[in-house]
Length: 375
Image 1 (cartoon, rainbow, N blue to C red):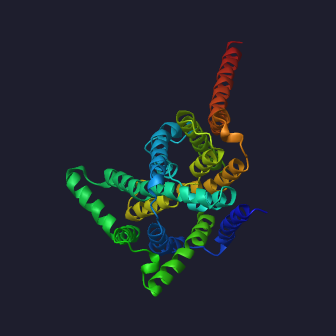
Image 2: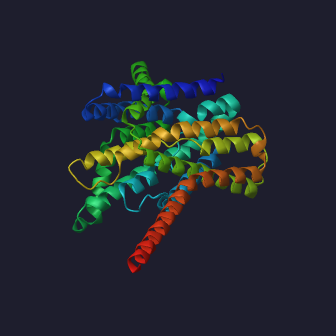
Image 3: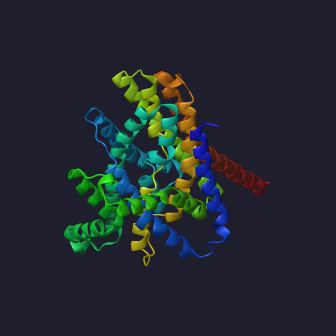
């Protein structure tokens, strides 16, 4: 079995362990405690190490911009697609999907397979591209989530100034943001992880090692997907993947890109699973709204998106990287995109025709009753 596939099996195994441990986690407070460990310890340490490990290469600076452009494009397109899947506008589910779906988690779902199928040089390119994605998921989505929260719950007379002050206060006090700020300062000073004292380096490394297993266990513990919600999220993620194929197809045609490895890298990166970091923003907002009846986001819906996103993304990335030169042709890229969008819209079509057939049956029943009365 390929190393990349074995890593995928390990990830799914952790999710399954979490699912089986549900019987031991009977209290909601226990899940909240686990989530706090992830958000306040493991996640900040992971981000800190990742930022200090960045080696900026001038010839690859276009890649972060391309990744950021993909994030922004998905963020702008998704609101038009969600109502087609029965996700009404201005609902917690709508805002949750809009925040999560444009995010990417290449570290968990893309990097292990890129290094196995394409080599370390392409892994370096993927890591550079992830810089743009990190800016989007850590900063842009955080600001958006907080803005949505304040727009919904702050009194209008408080003014924009108080919103900005509250937002800045949250920015400064959050552990993740503190670690990001510190890492950026150290980068500017030319200090990397090796330059830090041994006990700090070792402590951060061990905290970071907890990140992946804890996140996967938490997903398994928290996931509760109903049948209707499963079809809805599956359709949404298929459409997301289809849009990625179509966007990259347009990029390949526009730039004349022909090297199959480069195209495979673009596709694998774009098909990465949804990131856990927007969920961290959702959890923060959720904690601020504990005493409020009206919620900005749906925490459970976010977990279900993450839980389904990972295995689907893994299957798609493995299929792409095992395809050889199939996607060297832009026609095949467009065809794959249209197929995925078609699969995603099946649920909407089924719902539409079901409603139509019910309306026809109802009208016929009404006609039959009227005929019987006349007789």
